[in-house]
Each structure stands twice: as C-alpha cells, then as structure tokens.
Length: 413
Image (tube, rainbow, N blue to C red; front, side, top):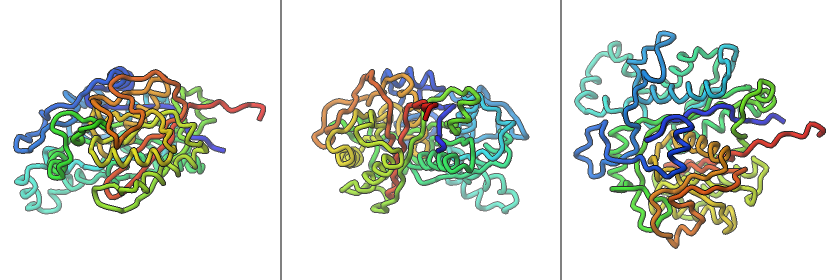
C-alpha cells in the first residue's frame, strides 16, 4: 500500500517567515494582527488584519525562465517564495522529476489586490481593447499563479489543479496530492495555498459584520469575530518508500481526509453541524484511526460566535464529549482564507515534530457553548502523534485532514 509523507515545508505568515521562526513565535503565542498599513482602508469600520510586514520578494527569489520578480503581484510573490522554501527544505532535485502533481488553494486573486481595488482603475481597464488588456486579464485569474509556478520551477509534465472554494481550498489541494500519490498517479506532489491581503476582502467582511475590532478570541466568551489575514504555505508530498530510499527527512504522514459540501447557506454553518461532523468522520475513516487516537485538533476556530459554537458541537459529536486538546492559530495570525488549511497543516507538522501544541491566544473566559479543552494563551508540551486539522468554508464547504507521526514499517511483515 502506498503511503503519503511530507518531506518539505515552506511558510510565510504575519509576524514570521520560515518554519523555525513560525514555530518559535507561534508556540509563544505571539499575536501579529494590527492596523493595516499597506492598503488605504480609512473609510472602513474595522481596519485590523494579519499582514506580512516588509515583505520584499527580491529577498527570496530571483528572475528565472523569463519571469521578472519585479512584475509579480503580491500573491504570486508569496506563493513562489513559500514553494521555493518547501522545495529547498525537501532537498528534492526537481530537474529529475516528471509528472509532479501541483495543487494550490486560494480565494482572492490578483484582481483583488490593492492595485485593482480602485474603481476608477477598473473602469479604465474595462474601457481598453482586449489586446491591451491581455496581461491584466491573465493576472486576475487564479490559474495564472499556478501556471506561473510551473513555469518558474520549469516543471516537466506537471499535473496542476487549482481550488478556489474559499477557506477549505488548500485542504482540498492536500487531498488532491494525497490521491495522486496514493493511487500511483504521481510520486511527488507540491500542495498548498496562498492568499494576499486585499481591500475587497476587508470590505466584504466588514459588510458581513463578522470582524472583531481588536483581537481574535476563538472559543472565548465574549469573542467578537474574525480577523482577515494573508500568508502562504506549501508542503512536499512523496511516496513513503521513495522518500526513505533517498534519505529524506520525513515530517509526518497524511493519513486521510474528509471533504463535503452541505450547501446549507452561503455564509452560515448548519446549526446541527452535520457537514462538519461528516467531514471529520470521513477523514478518520480514511485514515484508519478511531477518535480516541487523535491527540490534538487544529481547529478552524475563526473567533465568530456562531462558527466556534458550531465547531464545538461537531467536535463533541465526533469525539463523544472526549474532545482532544484543541487550539486555533487564527488568534495570532488572522484567517488567511484559501491559505488557512495549508498554513495549519505546516503548523500541525511542526507541533508533531516538537511535541508542543501552539496556543489559542487572547483567550479570556470559558464560554458555556464552547466547553472544550482549549489550549489557551500558552503552548502545551504533550505527545502529539495524530492531528485532525479542520477548515470549514462559506457555502458549506467542509474539509478535514488527518496528519500523523510516521510509524516505521516492520521489515519482517
């Protein structure tokens, strides 16, 4: 049976760049959300976000294969940087690889970055002929970033897939890479997600009245909402025997996943949490694990009153009121939408590696609607062998991934 393992990680989040800095800062509960500086949002009611400060793509990647770094949009720069980190971390020689599966999740595109948020610019763009608009039209497509990745890294016969189903998107990309390797369609997969800060996202969530004016407090009584964030993360997936043969360092194993669309409401989760419940149960079934074997839950935990209450209900149903310790890293970096699942997958792998769970920052008081073992404010040293990572999205898009410490196979079996 083919097993799917992780041999490289790359990550950029607000306040931290690279796996070591991410674990150091986030295990200490460092909060990196504050007033936005890169976008003029003075007319918005709430102007707090998780923003990657002072990001200069030239410090991480160089021009290659006809791609000029100076022409990259922010999302493109973040995505290429995170994937370069992951490839270098894995020590894989991509020049020798063919047929790599490439999956990426995102919600917003370059169209929704600051340079396209000015309505006058959009009007002037629409007034031009199609030939002169060609580059701009290509830039507003999420597919453009995926094609850019394939070109930049000069991938041979890649198998690309883009997922744009909101906050579940990069968990879907992980599931895609898992399937490609498990079903012997590929030996290697690059999967992850990217999201850049945009005025459009800030405006949208302001209008939904779902943003907190100060800090994100998942599962805490009196929580007021989420914080929009940005970031990028990629993981390198490989077939287990192949990874062992080349002496690769293995962070962990993707054991299974669960996906589903309950289509209950465009923004609100089902009150009975059935969509989230079935996705978690499917992930456990595919992984071959029982609920009691899960040591930690990387919760979706957005910090909105309804989401956290519904996720708690789902967890209690799946784990029969013996919910494992859980936390939400969104309390520190905000909700990075399409990139959230990939970022949380990398953090889950780092927690497994260090046997230390990152905390839910800003936690103040237990909520009777969210009575779970929420790891609050300080990290917790604990044995972490199996993690379930949740990402629930608008439209009832639910996704869960089970990530485990690698168990060596018995050679005598």
